Structures are given as structure tokens and as C-alpha cells.
Amino acid sequence: MGVPVVPITTGRACHLDAAMVSGGLKLLKQRLDPASLDLLWVENVGNLVCPAEFEVGEHRKVALLSVTEGDDKPLKYPVMFREAHCVLITKTDLLPYLPIGIAMGTNPVICRLLEPLMGLIRYMPAPAFIPLLIIYFGLDELPKVLLISIGTFFFNTLMIMDAVKFVPRELVETARTLGGRTLPILTRVVAPFIAPEVLDTYRINMASAWNLVIVAELVAATEGLGKRISLAQRFLRTDEIFMGVIVIGLIGLLIDLGFRALMRRACSWAN
Amino acid sequence: MHLQIDRLCKSFGYGAARKEVLRDVSFAVNSGEFVALVGSSGSGKSTVMRLIAGLEQPSAGAISIDGRPVTAPGSDRGMVFQKYSLYPWLTAAQNVAFGMELQGRSRPEVRERTAYFLEVVGLADAARHLPRELSGGMQQRIAIARALAAEPQVLLLDEPFGALDIQIRESMQEFLRDLWQRTGLTALLITHDLEEALLLAGTVHILAPSPGRIVRSVSVELDHSSMAHLRVSAPFLALREELAQNLRSLEPALPC
Picture 1 (cartoon, one colour):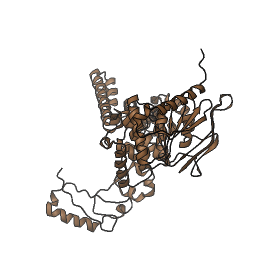
Picture 2 (cartoon, chains in turn red, green; picture 1 turned 180 degrees about the vertical axis):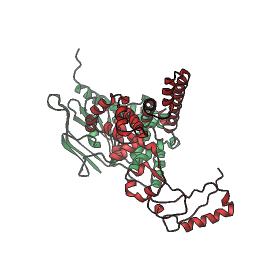
Picture 3 (cartoon, chains in turn red, cyan; picture 1 turned 90 degrees about the vertical axis):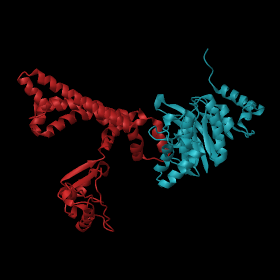
């Protein structure tokens, strides 16, 4: 991209300080005029402690947190998360490997406990929850997010559970005879094996999630495609309704193609 | 290394549905030995293997290695299954490295040993291939390399060539015999193929079905220098025929 980069060594320290950044800026000055810059990134190193406590002259602070670090980090390092103007969560592709579906697929007790409940809630139509969600959570984004969660979580969980049940016994037992314990078997055998099916499950359930976005907007929104359609309906503008429906379909198709491309790239072994 | 199997019994199910699979099975395997268990289907031979691997618990009896009782799976007992045991998303080399990584070996060591064991099974060229790009015989050789790389004290082979064509089977039998001679590994082979057992093993135990029990143990003293000759040599054929009759007499008579 031709972006000039200046490396700064921190020596024995575990983080940058203002003096080091100033030194770096001087190095940068030899190569270009600082006035010509719109944006200067300072990448600080190390943990989630020191970078929060030393100002290096920045206007905005962005903290990066990866999914694999665990959800306890904001509690453990509150200063960083208070100081940051933006928190970017990375490696979110690992999220689907997480908890309940895998737990149900591998552990018959958990499965028997949760499956009836899941089956029951799964058959409740998500749109029926809209009035309740509006009463409890108002008209903001939260009730819409909750609506989509209600409409997709249980399907996803049950389908992931089924995928886990189809992991060939030999693959798990081979890992056990090679000295593998429960956690490595989950992350290194079960998770990669079900990855293609998890992606496929997500692709299929994305359709209902997308439907629910529109349903939520029809009922409780001030803008959005669904809102436009309901406005058009009020004024009998059928052409706008058609347009809205077609755009919704096209966006859905694009999401679908995106998932297929992701699957081809990430799980080429399964094709 | 001394693997001792002592009066092993195993039943599945409870009450009226209880089925006795193994009764008082005892034998031993010592370092460098190649031992085979032969039996028809229903003789519980795979169950013996799963018990030794620690994947099932015996109903009675004991399994020990050098005096330490076996209670759970461990990397001291490597296992090769009949099929479906390579990780389809890993390349051949990554499959071989898998067990060593689980053991927490250092990266350079894993890399070096992976290359070495691919070489041992003659598949150095296939290192970067996915399992689905390899033939059935090659896949089993990778599975054997993976098991050996984890440095087991005994290699458990559960019908390793049962899913292969007859020609590939024969070349794999020669491969395994050769591997045993070169590396001095200790192996326990489970098979329903009497010929395979006699070609490969120094000691052959014959299992009778329902419930599985050892009815005869033979120590094979034949000239193993050339497997092709051995297959058709008179003493080999005589021993095979004798044991085959023995096996046939154990089968329940077919209803007419």
C-alpha cells in the first residue's frame, strides 16, 4: 500500500511511552512531511495493562481483544476497556465452535436436560415475541437483536449438536490413544470436523435471521427496508413494495454466496 | 516391556439382555514380539483390543504394562483402526504430527520426527497430500506412522488391512513385516485372516466365539525370509489348513 512504517524498539520495557513515540516521529520526519499525514497509527505492544496507563499523544485509543483470550478480560483489565474509545473483537470466526451445541452433542446428560426445552422453544414463532420485546426493551436495536437471537439460536444449537453426534468414533478414539484429553479433543478433533456443517447451518439459518430483521422493521422501526415496505403499503405504492422485496432477496443471495465462498476457503477438505 | 492380559472377562448389557463377549482371556506380549489374535466375527477380538487400548473397562480380570494396571487410553499403546481414522482436514504430515503435538513435544522435534516416520513408511512424497488424495493402503501407512511417531510401547493393529483390496493387502503385509524387522516394534494384531496372522506373527492365539476365549496358541516357527515363498511353502500351508479346520470346528453348525 506504500504506507511508511517506522519500527520502535521498546528495549527492556513492555510498552511504548511518549519519548519513544517522539523518537519514532523524528525518524518518520526524515522520510516525509508530517503535515501531509491524515492519520497516524501507533501500534502499542504487549498486554492489556501498561498501554492503558501511558499516554503516547494519541487522539483515539483502540483495544484489540481476541475471542480466544476469554470473556473475563474486561473484568480483569478494566482500565484498558475504560480508556479505549473502541474495542475491536478479533478471531470471531472461532465463536461458533463454542459452547452449548458441542456440549449437548458430546455429553448425553446435558443433551437430555436441554433438548426438550430447546425443542419446545424452537417451535414458538419468534415474531410472537415482538410485543413482549417492545414492552420490555423499547424500540431501540436491542429488541431486534433479541428477536433474531430467539429465532435462530435454538435451531443453530440443535443442528450443531447433531453435527457433533456424527463425528466418527474412530477419530475421537484415535486422539485418545495418542494421549489426547477432553479439551484438546474438542478443539482439535470435534471443532474442525463440524466446522463445515456449522458454516452450512449458519448459512441456512441466516435466511430466517434476515427474515426476522425485516419483520422487526415492519413492526417497530423508524427506518430500514421493512419500514419502507410498510410505508409503501399504506400509500398503495406497489412498485416500491416490489422493489423492496427484490432488494431484500438480493441481499439474502449475496449473504448466501458469501457463506459459500467462506466455506470453500476455510473447509476445502470437505468439498 | 511386558504386556500382561490376565483372565479378562467382558459382558455388555444387564439382566436378560446381558451378553458375555469374553471369558478368561489370558496372554502376554513382550518387547519386540509380534503377536496375533485370530477369530471369526463375534469372537470378541476387537473388544480385546479396545480393552487393552483403555477405551473400554473389563468386567473382570486385569491388563497391565510392566506391572502398572491399564485404566485409560494412553500414548504408551498406539492404535491403528480398520478405517476412517485419519483426520480429513489435515495433510499426511500433519496427521503424523498430530499425536506428537498432543504430547506437547517441541516444534523442531515434531518436524524432524514427522519427516523421519514419513520416510519409514515410504511416503515422504505424500507429506502435503490430504487423506482423500491417498489410496487406502497409503492412508493406513500414514495411520501406522502416526501411531509409531507417538513412541508407543506396543502397537495395537485392529484389522488394519481389512478394508483393502487383496493385492494391496498382500503388499501391506510385506510392508508391515519389513517395518517390524527394521524398527523392532512390538505389535499386537487382530485379524480374521489366518494367513495374515501366520505370515506376520511369531505367536498366534485362536479365539473361539460366543463367548470369546482362547482355544489354541501356536508359536509359528517358519522361515519368514521371503513372504512370497512362505505363502506357498508346504509347512505354511499345512499349518494354515490345520488351524483353519480348528477354526471351522468352532463355528456353530449352519441350520439347513
